Image (cartoon, rainbow, N blue to C red; front, side, top):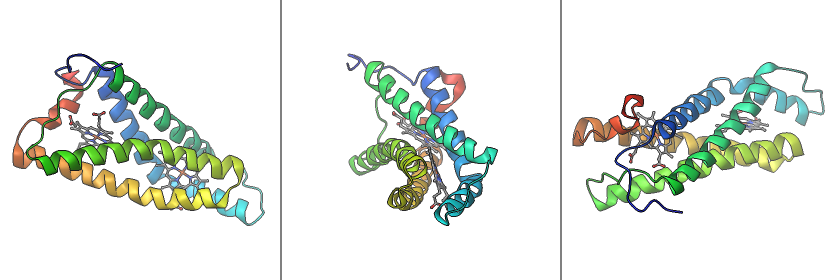
Length: 165
Ligand code: HEM
Ligand code: HEM
């Protein structure tokens, strides 16, 4: 179901989910060492042992996926504000970045779970490749946001500001 008329802005919930996902993804990178160490022990045939940060990685990653799917449902049902694009090329680049971000917010947890719960080494390798692609897309996304804010000065950043909900 697609909204007949596009809303003027993102809803409070859409904005909250964007920033919760951002915080969760950031902590996945900041506290990644515990998960890497546990995985190394498992691949060496040792016991992983209990580390709360491993639990945080699994639960945090699962939440990222739930939030991404939730946002996609809201996107389809409620809609999103019309795109602000300075040029066709920039509009396409933004669209590709958003599609990539959504895809990786789903593929990262899936590959991680297949590695962790299924013991599949290739899934861990995929997880490791995608972590770099995700970081690159986030960097591009932030550059895009700053470009809108400081070069185009079109107020796009304020669309993701909590007070605008
Ligand atoms: C958006 C979600 C996720 C992000 C951004 C993410 C990110 C990362 C990062 C940055 C590493 C460190 C790799 C390294 O440099 O050594 C890692 C490792 C790992 N993650 Fe995740 N992760 C996510 C979700 C998950 C989930 C849900 C699971 C399991 C259920 C998981 C399982 C693993 C495993 C097993 C490793 C070790 C792989 C290795 O070191 O080769 N991840 N993850
Ligand atoms: C983990 C980091 C991030 C991820 C995964 C992410 C993901 C996304 C996605 C998928 C969208 C498209 C929303 C939609 O229309 O359905 C979006 C929009 C947006 N993001 Fe992020 N984001 C991240 C970090 C940031 C940061 C750090 C900023 C600010 C510097 C930011 C600013 C924005 C803005 C302003 C929009 C609205 C774009 C528009 O209205 O066309 N994001 N983000």
